[in-house]
Amino acid sequence: MIKKGIILAGGTGSRMSPVTKAINKQLLPLYDKPLFFYPLSVLMLAKIKDILIIVNKGQVQQFKKVLPNGKNLGIKITYLEQEKPRGLPDAFIIGEKFIGKDSIAMILGDNFFFGQSLTKKLIECTKLTNGAKVLLHPVKNPHLYGVATTNKQKKITKIIEKPKKTKSNLAVTGLYFFDNKVIKLSKSLKMSKRNEIEIVDLLNKYKNKNLLRAEIIGRGGAWLDTGSIKDFNNTSNFVATIENRQGFKIGCIEEIAFNNKWINKNHIINATKFYGNCEYTKYLNSIINK
Image (cartoon, rainbow, N blue to C red; front, top):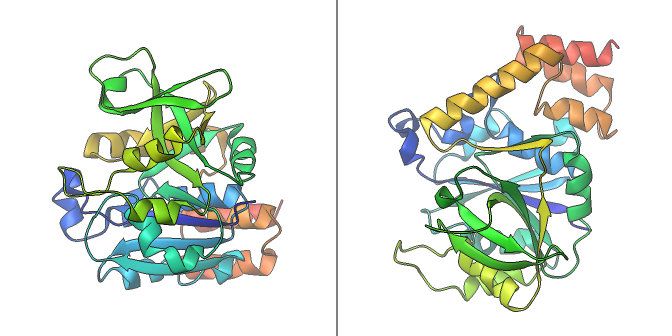
């Protein structure tokens, strides 16, 4: 079982400049919560309690103001800094000591996932013991993404980055599950023309060994990228619509921890004191007053 996870929350957020000149993108409010609450909630739904958050140099304290160490959620949060963006697989090199001899999940700090069957799929992915698994999601415009082709056994047979033509519409999302070989393989990657080590190159190393599988988010689920201002606002509107219509919150980390029995009512009460008089606090109160 995969019991450790990484949230890659570094990067310059250049597509959202100038707002990201002053603050890490993952700390910006996606509707009523910091953006990084959403990928954190995904790992928590997967029952992962030991989490490394990788941030830009000098930004650890900004994150700790919101989430110091995870004790309030019954989990363990570790922070590490990335000197400069070197590509997604750099997370496994930075996090080598954290990973140790374990398998690892990684989610990008700006990715948003939602769906009724999502938790079940996440739990299934954590059962990985050998190879790698990625979440795929059908998209209307595959030429904008890394696209995977799969066979009937859900093994990935081809990955193409932003293809001009492709029969597949399955985009590679920002959620990955790897065995422990990911550290060694990441170290073996060569720099691309962008002067980064590329996640597609890492995935291809697993594919070439016939060890890359897929889990597909179906029509009942959603995967949204928040990389641009337009996408960020669209995702924020999506969250607002769902929450206001249905009355529950997406990405409420305290609620997930409470439902997982990692914390009790006293932890929720302390959270309401920490957040103060706000709508989020009112929702937390409703959880323990049911």
